[in-house]
Image 1: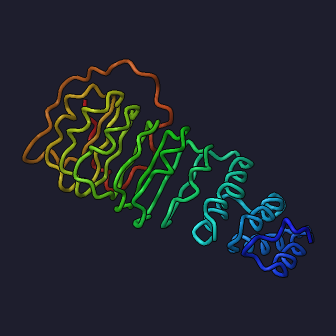
Image 2: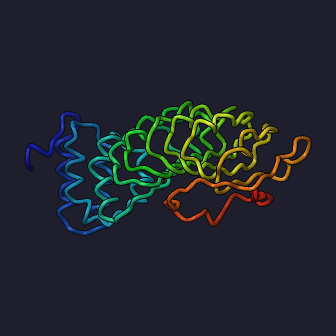
Image 3: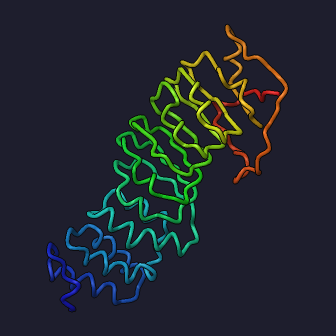
Length: 266
């Protein structure tokens, strides 16, 4: 066995046995070996060995994403295995569920769309902020998120995040479409700080009873639940949309059931 395959924390005999599985050329055995290599804590040699055979393993990006929470070195795993697999599959979007950390996400530079779901322990989105090509971000059930790093995101969906106002996404100057489904949201006045905004969709926001300044913004599209009409009706006025290039993606075709009573203004 080549000494370069042996990491500082790896058992040489273990690596030798795994390398034999890899060299059989059989996808089932290669997958088994890779599944063990990603659990080894060493200087990166185990991941390097796995990376040489990842193409023959038949592991999809989705399969690797499911392994992400279990690996010994998430950053190295994303760089050596997940990122190349996404490129090979020509993938530019991923959905991440129930992760406790986003370590390694910074290597997925091909991403244009990112959905992070039910990751309640995640508070920091710094790694997402390094993805300069990211245009669509969906945060669903990530109640612990404390801030949004400024970036180039043009479409943002926030569902189940415990914010009382929109001061955090206000830093996204390129934001064009915003979807809100936040039970604790009370204030949307920060919408005034989003100069490129052309669409706002307010869903289930139980604490929100004042839509100002939504009716006064030069939007092309806006929806809100009929329940917000009670007590403090939303004034209607003719739309005066500002000229704007077409949306980068098609309108959502499967809105949340909670938004079924949304009314389109104008």
